[in-house]
Image 1 (tube, rainbow, N blue to C red):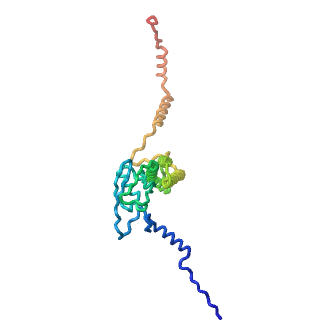
Image 2 (image 1 turned 90 degrees about the vertical axis):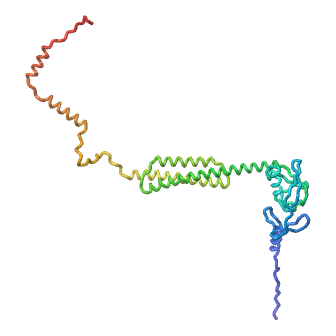
Image 3 (image 1 turned 45 degrees about the vertical axis):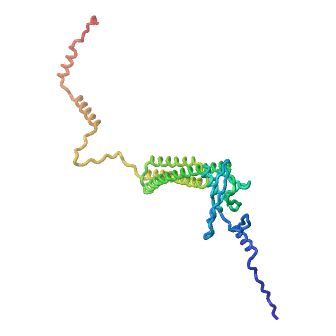
Length: 304
């Protein structure tokens, strides 16, 4: 006798699936103040296609003792209402604070969700703290933009210097010689770019870009040190030119005259030969007689 098997079906929806579905449903739908369940909206969402046209309401907004009538979409957000009031007051929309029925409304909240209808009254106030936060944020953004531009300029300069470093590397790798002054000038230019990067106060992505450029500069400086070492090695390996060997003179030219000191030496040798040659006795005796018979000069000292 065979026993019957119990066939049990699994539930169509598990508790986990039901909770996920409920969470999705909570995110998609919302309840209006009148109790109507509607689809949840965001300030950037578009109205559903094919739906009824959204009516425009007239709202009385009081600011600095003056009441302004503003025509706005009934499903608009308070942020859009602040933009319309900014055109009338000359203030920035983020510097305004909306108060409806004694409660401050957030810029992302919608008028119809709070209960604002046609001819409703609300108050707009200037928010000094929001204005201070906005100014601080604008200064921070401006500082970040200046830092990004400075890093970009340094990057362009480093690209130009990198091409010159590559050219020197090509020359040295082929066994050629480079001018030491060129290597020194490139090194100083790269160090100047490194000083510019150190002066940039950056945060976030700009700081990361600055670090990348610093590594590039250091890499090129190390490459120049290697170029200097290779150039010195090539100089020692190549034979030095022999400057003592005289250049060959073409055959069609006459021989060069001897140097001046050789000519002077030849004159002295001729003089020595003449002085050592024997002379006749008559001129010598005549010269000696003339020397002995010549009277000594007399001076009249009384004239002085």
